[in-house]
Length: 221
Picture 1: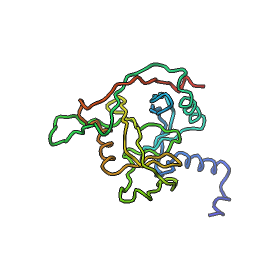
Picture 2: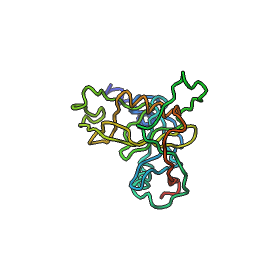
Picture 3: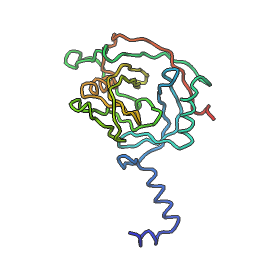
Picture 4: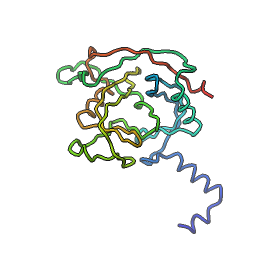
């Protein structure tokens, strides 16, 4: 293998490195350029960021950002009071009060696919379309699957894109990693979150509407 690498020209080495950079570091699939939007919880509450250049994995949906883009995202998250482009109103649900739709009882409820990934977190931990589940039989010793740090019982928040609109969910029971802040859910909670992400919940469920500032990353230097 070392002899093969020595035979490659600098241009060939550069091309190989470039091709590797275009693959997902988690599943190895190709990534494609895209422009996305994401929601994040900050010191002033939930905010929405639009026009984010990213590379999206074709396999697992993981998002990757150039270093300067990541820095601009963190700038918006750290100073969310400035340069908001507009305000939108979104519904906020409390998970314990949400009534999910049973297909057998409500056959006419349309199936609404999630149109974007969950909220963008400070540490940009790996986010998947399905919540990460934890075995409740081992709550006292459950370690983070990503950094192997200890987890603690917690109530977390999340945000979903459903049928083109944003909604937020609070009071989600989880075990949260004390190091990287990645949340983990038991199977029942994970199934309920997945149902919400697909829009399968009773429209009249108790909720409140809140105003959310919208930022465009193209306006951030």
